[in-house]
Length: 298
Image 1 (cartoon, helix red, strand yellow):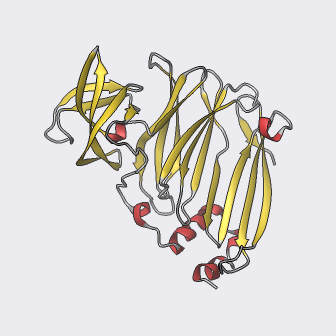
Image 2 (cartoon, one colour; image 1 turned 135 degrees about the horizontal axis):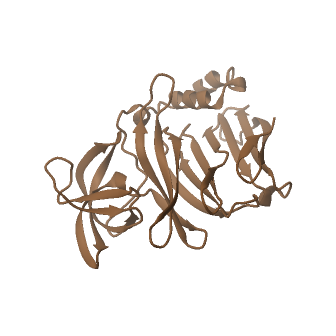
Image 3 (cartoon, helix red, strand yellow; image 1 turned 120 degrees about the vertical axis):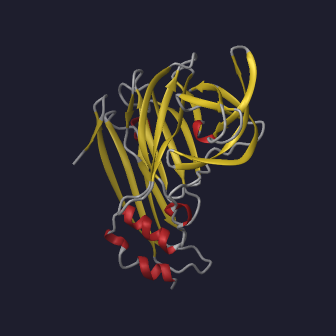
């Protein structure tokens, strides 16, 4: 039997999932970025020739990369597009996290211009909802782990019209545990009364014991409404835990219900090259939706 199986089996049954995740991280010796005071998040994935959208309300363009000894030559507002020309080795730590500088080209006032922008000013991803409106998200600040509280990013979600006017904003906390990829999806209202769309943002773990977090926000035409979150984590051949959200258009039942389907499995066999058998447990959590918000059903 593997060492990590010996550790998990006596204690996973009743362990809260967040503590279990920390245990999995410890057992996989995956501390790296999780413990860093100033992480360098990998989520933008930009290369020369790519385009990106400004997330900050005001993003400064400088004549040279870096904060010290450089001059602000311009500023761009949220929703403006820049073209990546090149990444430069200069980095800066702002709002608690470290990121590179990029040379960019952009159009403003009918002219093509260029300069340098700090990566943290750009949106992580964007998509379109509600007849062409742009929804984008990015980082506002990183807060390192303190005592028993895990590290997290304060993220911002913005909705812009075709003239780049900000129609709505929403902040949320993303629990950072070395997730390596992010995505955004614009969905329909999924059968929930009063919603035009649902936006799902994911921060995904692709390695041993790195969790994936999913954040849902309903758009009712005037504001974002936070919806229940979902979570999943696994250690191949040892343990897995998944949460799946089901909305009315999916579960085909009462339009006022949101279901969270939970399944967790603990390996019964060693990983000997054969199919692993799991002892599984399933649970359903029900949320009541009233058109303005939700409550967990007891």
